[in-house]
Length: 285
Ligand SMILES: C[S@@+](CC[C@H](N)C(=O)[O-])C[C@H]1O[C@@H](n2cnc3c(N)ncnc32)[C@H](O)[C@@H]1O
Image (cartoon, rainbow, N blue to C red; front, side):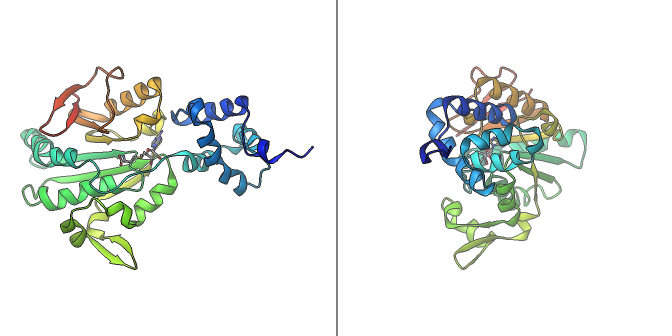
């Protein structure tokens, strides 16, 4: 029998739970019952692309181990990728004025050639790691010309990483950008903002699912990790798991920054909470 339009594009409670479980088990992202409608609307384009008949068919499709490759499209469809340049201004200021100088001072006690590793975990379209790269070029390199910087940007969504690698942005992304940086590091053409190569080459991008221990293990010895505005999508056990992986990826003395609205209260006691003049950070001692 033909399904009615209503049942084609909505999920039963059962179907919703099955899909939610797949998403949770693979990514840590947790959809509560109140987000059922949001999830349905985000999956619609997948059933159209796959030429499936209903959301119910999609649930069966994604549960089939033979269709594991679809997970990548599922992550593209369900993630919220909001970001922009200079979003966490106060954290970047603390990075520039306090944290990097402190790390360089400590590291240069052991070796004259200092390398600082910064990871923007869940970087979406790349604005966060590129902001860090511009600050390094502009403010840090003139004072510490011999210090090397390695910046990694990663995300679970491959689609956003393609944008990040292209370095081409819309007005929306640069809306909070100081005029000086905009003029110096972008070429504006036909309403698009092209990031210059001198910034692009400082950042490497990689597809990393923070909920997957094997993937996170590929990153180690970080001095600073930015993991902002992603823990909000996880439930408490998932946050605990991801934060413990980030802890392992940090060097002793390294710092973790999370989003302004986020906290590690009830999630991890492993870090020392550090109050910087305008921001807070979590330090691995
Ligand atoms: C709202 S954006 C935050 C971007 C940036 N950190 C910022 O604060 O502006 C959240 C990003 O987290 C990513 N994300 C969600 N779950 C993830 C996971 N399990 N592993 C890695 N990235 C994930 C999404 O794809 C999305 O791009």
